[in-house]
Amino acid sequence: MSHTSTAATGVRQAQKLKTRQALLDEALTLLEEQSLSSLGLREVTRAVGVAPTAFYRHFRDTADLGVALVEEALGSLHGTIGTALADEGDAVVRIDRTVGLIADLVRTHPAHVRFIARERHGGVQPVREAIGTQLRLFAQEVAAAFARQPESRGWSEEDLLMLAGLYVDHMVMAASALLEAEGDGEHARDVARRQLRLVSLGRQHWLD
Amino acid sequence: MSHTSTAATGVRQAQKLKTRQALLDEALTLLEEQSLSSLGLREVTRAVGVAPTAFYRHFRDTADLGVALVEEALGSLHGTIGTALADEGDAVVRIDRTVGLIADLVRTHPAHVRFIARERHGGVQPVREAIGTQLRLFAQEVAAAFARQPESRGWSEEDLLMLAGLYVDHMVMAASALLEAEGDGEHARDVARRQLRLVSLGRQHWLD
DNA sequence: CCATTCAGTAAACAACCGTTCTCCGGCGAA
DNA sequence: TTCGCCGGAGAACGGTTGTTTACTGAATGG
Image (spheres, rainbow over the protein chains, first blue to last red):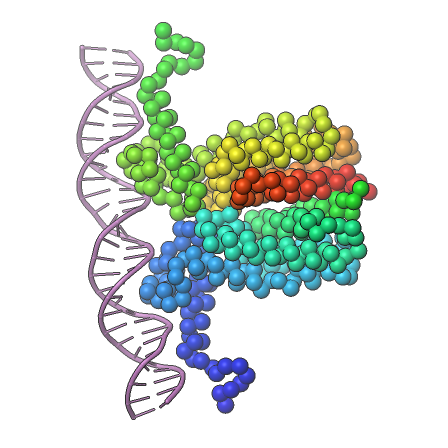
C-alpha cells in the first residue's frame, strides 16, 4: 500500500514542503508593506516560528525566495489568458471577460498581484528578470491567441507582439489600480474596460 | 550691497541647501540598485561624507527624503508634456515628438526615471501617494491638452481622463523599457511609437 | 561687539542583521 | 534492528542599523 501512483508518501519530504510553503506565505504577507530588497531572512523565519538557520534548507537568500514567489504568482496562470481571449464572443464580450478575470485574480490573490506589480521594477535584479521573462511569455501567448482571430488578418508578427505587449502592460496596470481602489472598485473596472475597448478600436483600424 | 532683490546672500542657508542636495544626489545613486524601503539613513550620510545625525537637519526619515525626490523628479516637468502634445503637427508628428521627449528624459535623467518607475508601486506609502498625486496631475494636464484639439469634439470629460490615463501609464512604461534596453534602444522607441499610434487610431474612431 | 541661532559632530545605546559551526532526533532504507 | 541522511535547533560572531544626548563653532542680527 505504498505505491499509489508516482511516488511514496514521503513524510519527510512532505514536512519539508510544508515549511517551505509556510516561508513563502509569511514572506508574501510581510511584503504587503515593504519591498523585497528590505525583507530580512530572520523576519520571515520569526513569522513562521522556525529557527533562522532553517531558512537555508530551502532558499539561498531572500532574492531566491523572491524568484520562487514569482513562479507561484505567475506560473499557474498560463492557460487562463488564452481562454479569456479565445474563440467565442465578439470584441466587447471578450474585453468584459478579460477584465472580469483580472478582477477575480485581484480578489482571490491580492498579495500575489501586489508583489508582481511592486517587484516588476523593484530593486532585486533576479526577481526583476524572472518577472520580465514570465510577462514576455504571457505576451507571446496573447499574441498567439490574437493570431487565431480573424481581425488579425494581414498583421505582421512584430505588430502582433507590439499589441500583445500593450495588453499585458495594461492588465498589470489595471490589476494594480484595482488593488489601490477602495470599495468594490467599480470605477477602476469601468476605466480598464474602456481603455481596452479603445485599444481594440485602434486594432480594428490598424491596417489603413 | 546686501539687498540684491528678494533676500540676502545667506551663506548659512546656502551651505544647508548644498548638503541637502548632496544627500538627495547620493540617495538617488544608491537607489539605482535597491528600493527606498531598504535605503538606510547611515548609508546615505556615509556616501555624502557627513555625520549620521546631520541627516535629521534635513529629513525626518528616508521616506521623507523619498517624497522630496519625487518632487525633484516630476515637479520640474509640468509644462513639458503640454508643449509636446499641443498645437502644431498632425497625430504622427505629435507622437514622434512625445516619444523623443521621453527618450531625452531617460538619457539626461536615468536615475530619476528609474526611481519613479520603481517606487510607483513600491513599499513606502507616502512616496507611493506622492507619485500617484503627481501622475494624476499629469493626466489632468494631458486631458486638458487633448481637449484643445479638434479630434476631441464630442468627448466627455470622463473619457478624456480615461485616454489621458492610458497615455501617462504608457509613457512611464516606455521610459522604463528604454532604461532596461541595451544600446540606443531604437527598438524600444519604435515599439513605443507604434503603441501610441494604435491608441491614437482608437481615439479617432471612439465615437462610433 | 555681543548674544543667539543652528548646521554639523561625536559618542554611546540597544536592537537587529546575515552567516557559520555544532549538535540533535526522527525518518528511510538495508 | 541498525545506520546514514537531513530538516531543524541553538549559540555565537562581527557588523550595521536608527535614535538620543550633549557639544562645537561659525554665520547672524540687534
